[in-house]
Amino acid sequence: MIDDDSFEDDDATQHIEDLFPFMVGEKDLIDQLEATIRASLKTLEPAELRKMAAFLFALERLPYATAGVSIDLAISQRIEGNLSYVSVEISGDAFRLSTGGAVYSPDVGSDSYSETSFEVETGGYREGTTEAFEEWLDMFRATHGSYSMEDFGDDDIDLTEEAPADGWDRLAAYWDSHGGDEYGY
Image 1 (spheres, rainbow, N blue to C red):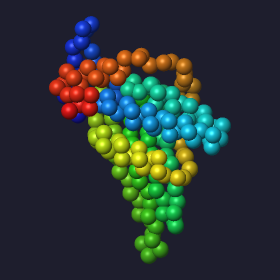
Image 2 (image 1 turned 90 degrees about the vertical axis):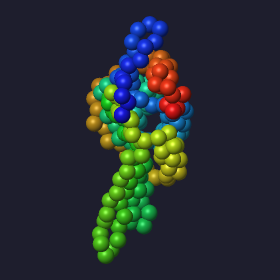
Image 3 (image 1 turned 90 degrees about the horizontal axis):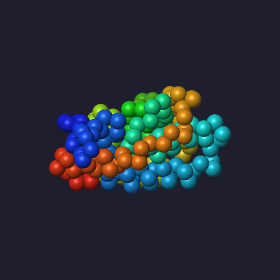
Image 4 (image 1 turned 180 degrees about the horizontal axis):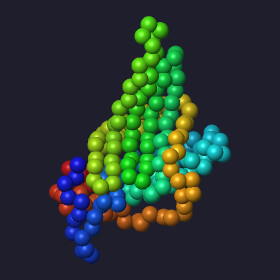
């Protein structure tokens, strides 16, 4: 948890309450995630493309939150009765990376598991490291399965409203004011 939600800059007191508390060095990971998803767009059906457009819109606006968006995008694969997935969820107040699945045994039945690898929320909550984000991204790229998307957001979201361009600069100044470099250390 980040203790102080504001810092002083040249103009006035700045707050990061409207930003996800990413480390500036994580921007490259978000860009890689976006590129990976965009490379797979040709395989999606029209209804999936509509949901994916909202997902990509929210992803491009990071580190700003996007009101009205709440989508969980997962890649899942089945191997010999077992299921595994790699999931990214983005909403108006959270960005979460997770993995999980279910293991089947004829003697016992099915047992499910899940783990959140990385999570940030507006207001300053942060759980996980840049390294955990990198490891999750490697799994996301390596998983060969099908996309599934659960959309809990607003169907009428305006996909044209651009985020202010200063988000990553504000985060850099915030982390710098807290004695850290671009990675928050």
